[in-house]
Length: 198
Image (tube, rainbow, N blue to C red; front, side, top):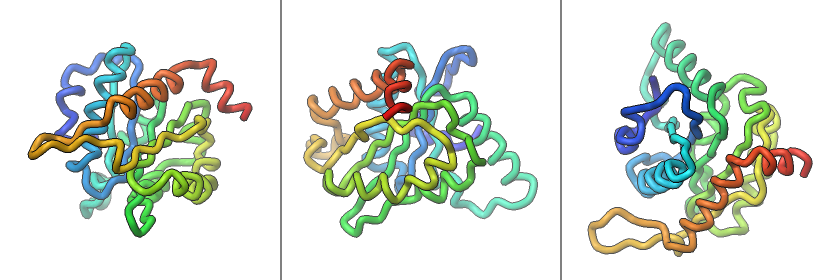
């Protein structure tokens, strides 16, 4: 399988093929930064709700794959997306408003890849006002993929983190609560229907 960060392998070693899972697609250019801590938190919250997390990183496609190998990787990627119950899109916004690598990652997927799937957008960094601009910039690609974008997106800014010494960064209690609520909403079929009609 592809796209599994070593940092979240702990959550993926004993995958139950019959258990529902959420697939996180990360556009972060550095998968060993705050993205790692965020994925650990998402995995823990999903575990509480009886669901598993799997992750694909845009950086995993940065190698010079050619021929048969890249076709195998893309096939595995498409299968992960096809069987996921919910898609979580993780993308950073830096000081230069750079949207990371999420767009090139989504471009690898065929039309309709997100059809009938709830899609939760999680934006890290930047300001809340940047989120609307990112939604607009991503609208055409998300429309092509036919996912149900849940509202509102989740913004995790610099003040949403607690950093103490050399310890890994952690979300504030309030931010983790917002994340838990957003994930619970994404896993709710009734909420997905509301998003589709919005």
